[in-house]
Amino acid sequence: MTTYRSRVAGTGSYLPPDLITNADLEKLVDTNDQWIRERTGIEHRHKAADNQATSDIAYEASILAIKDAGLQISDIDCILVATVSPDYLTPSTACVMQARLGLNGVPALDLNAACSGFIYGISVADAYIRMGMYKNILLVGAELLTRYVNYKDREVCILFGDGAGAVVIQRTDSNAEDVIYSSHLRAEGSLGELFIRKAGGTRLPITQKEIDEGTHWFTMKGRDIFKNAVRTMSATCTQALAANDLKMEQIDWLIPHQANWRIMEAVADHFKFPKEKVISVVHEMGNTSAATVPVAFDMARRDGRLRRGQTILLTAFGAGLTAGSAVLKF
Ligand code: UT7
Image (tube, rainbow, N blue to C red):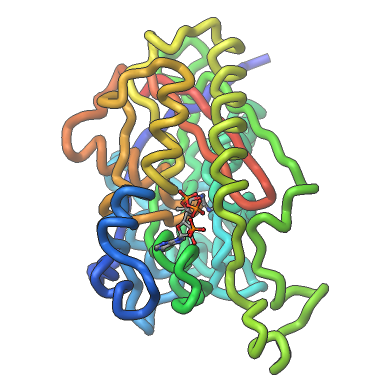
């Protein structure tokens, strides 16, 4: 039987040009630039234009990733979009993208694993490719989180922004070196209340009461999530290293979910891993949920840090609660 492996063939990212600076937030809530920088590392976030939806920014990132992979749009044979902020509840954002890309007939589906969505997407794409189902999977993490943020809630509004990152996951030979080695996923559904957008689904439809009470916004228990994030990202990274008989010293770059620099720093400290080898772009985009890992990947490539042949450990945590890691040679 032929066995296949998968590789990251191309990357792309798109951050809308409008910015929300810490100074802008000072005018909305009781916060200040120094607190935000010291507690999170964030300097500004990007905000999509009023006429942009998630699929629009996903499209921009996707075109760049497909071009970077040296492919035509017509080479894509499966579309996966990781998002918690879809254009519509249905149809999926992946289907909206499929129509826009003109890929009629190509399978398209959304994945909701919140900020871990891109890592979950890697594991799905890798499994599809290993099974021989597809050759060039477009995997996008795209979010318009500013639409779900209450700009009266200082703990939440300082964190989130809009953005999209995309990769093409491509079939390659089983003996190729530049492959996705493995992915490890986990979830703790019993902790779902720590980050939740309560109203808007079948449990709690949006009514005037919900709007008045603000349950249609994201609500969060930040400190509990912080502790869980360090624990679960460290645990899944340990799994990823063990499964591939790798040591942290063999990792060229750690690309964690970009939620808060202090969380990334704590994971690096857990492994005594040099901070200079942690890719962080959180200062320039804040938390863009499923988009942070592919955007950070793409930005590090474009600024010359991340190069072909390097070994990269990706890790994320998010609402659900979910977490995961993937290790690959680029
Ligand atoms: O996918 C999940 C996404 N969520 C996350 O990733 C959140 C993870 N958690 C975090 O990033 C951090 O917990 C936060 C940035 C949210 C908060 O930082 P912290 O160091 O954990 O602060 P804290 O919650 O312990 O609060 C410290 C103080 C509190 O005041 P008191 O009780 O000490 O008087 C807060 O009320 O800071 C206060 N505070 C603020 N002050 C100024 C909370 N938010 C703000 C703010 N500006 N924006």
